[in-house]
Amino acid sequence: MIYNLDKINEMAEGDEDFIVSVISVFLEEVPEDLEGLEKAISCKDYENIYKLAHKIKPNVDILGMEQTRAKALEIETLGKTTGSMEEIEGIFPILKKDIHQVVAELKNDFDL
Image (cartoon, rainbow, N blue to C red; front, side, top):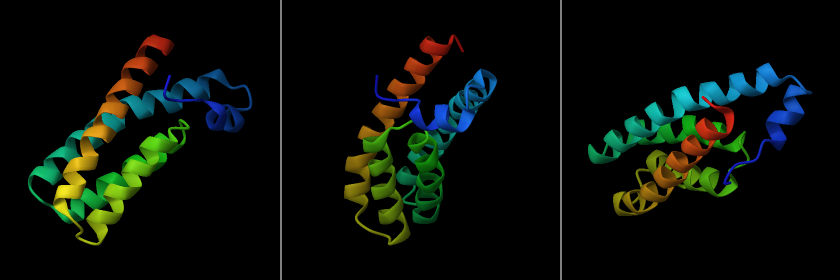
């Protein structure tokens, strides 16, 4: 399991509906943002690379995915500073793999 629900549980204060709602939003938005990020990278669109990585970052953070958050932050920073596209292209597959893995785990764990 590459996620943990400590942050969500703390915010939810026992409200299961809230937890499922946060996870549902994650499952709905993050794969779309990830797809957009992949397109932005292929187009070398630094502005959208920055925006989409910035948007993904808090979503993985709330699920306690520290390493994934760090990868999103690296891509965000490189996008903002128009850094090395090779570096972005090297980091992205790790981010993508982690997100696909957590999406599969969440769908399975929460029957969504």
